[in-house]
Length: 249
Ligand SMILES: NC(=O)c1ccc[n+]([C@@H]2O[C@H](COP(=O)([O-])OP(=O)(O)OC[C@H]3O[C@@H](n4cnc5c(N)ncnc54)[C@H](O)[C@@H]3O)[C@@H](O)[C@H]2O)c1
Image (cartoon, rainbow, N blue to C red; front, side, top):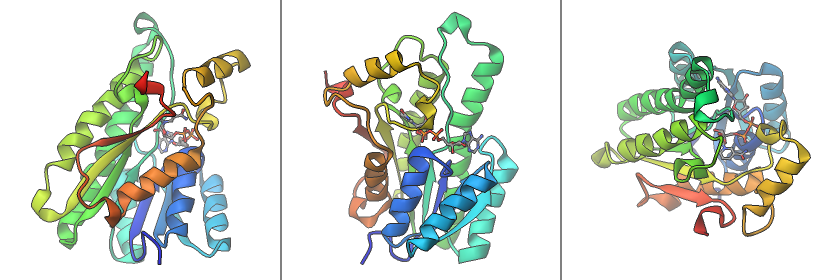
């Protein structure tokens, strides 16, 4: 028996990194997974790998900055599987720059992707879950920068801080309807998001985590699956730090 048996789960940004690991872990736990993102080829690869491992998945293309795409993502999911039980709003981009260096274009795309994108996923997931009257679980991807600042992490921290408060609000808005919302707050995780870093920056980041290494996408996925499952039935409106001790020191 899996933790997500009979649950239909959307994972945005699951064509790579943390989202891909979530999609695979959730499928292993019995979930029916809607892999979503902008990259059709990568989406098809993830679906193929899940299917070959005995899981159930489809790909639905969606850009989280588009309201139409997110409305369509939920509609296609319901068309295919009749319901939606779990929304993992995970898509995100990285961007560094001191406050005076961040252009309006940088700021706008960061907020559109990492904050408004999460809002749209939560909004349309809740709308569907309310119709079903069977509750549901939302897991948003925040960051350690939902809590702590770092020089050069300006627009990203603003967006991830927003994800924290958005999640808290969604998480306490539907107590009688059985809809929970939480977020994960990873430390630095070894994914394509960090691939542009020079080797010395990469090494320096490792040292910021008391465990002495970066996290793995699978380590975040385990926490996402837990929060999405009924094992977390009394947990809502909060965040789980998965950061190798980064914020503890
Ligand atoms: N890697 C880290 O160190 C780290 C740490 C904390 C939080 N996070 C967060 O984890 C999430 C996943 O990042 P990752 O590390 O797996 O990196 P990643 O680049 O592998 O994954 C991000 C995914 O989001 C998708 N995406 C980006 N813009 C999109 C858009 N407009 N519409 C739809 N999909 C879009 C990308 O195509 C990709 O599949 C992000 O929200 C990121 O901010 C990452």
